[in-house]
Image 1 (spheres, helix red, strand yellow):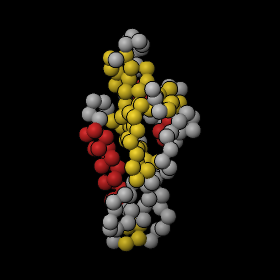
Image 2 (cartoon, one colour):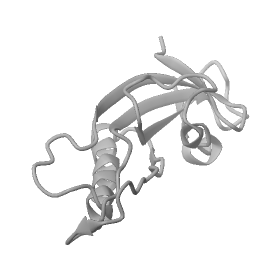
Image 3 (cartoon, one colour):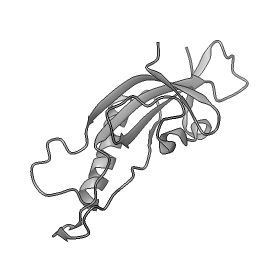
Image 4 (cartoon, helix red, strand yellow):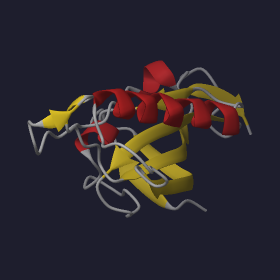
Length: 143
């Protein structure tokens, strides 16, 4: 059973089979969101996905960054990422058309940031998430 289906821009349909969400800035005790902090947040999310899902390739969707206040402190201007971090396990039909469609599937672990704690679905999913280059990034496996 899948949590949702997403229609990629390429036309491929992918299924979300597992999803982990957390708040982007949870536990941040000092400072403010800035480029340096956000770069660490993005790379940390990627490393977490690689650690927790080492059985498949991992892809980080580059997050959008907003600059609500050009003033800032010692670390530069305020820069804000979307408020929810996500790591999802996605599956689809095999990438290699020569593989038996009954026996093979493809998998990709995707890490991304989104504004709300909602499960992405259909063609309403974030355009950056729908733009994943599945055929280049996913890995085929035998069921």
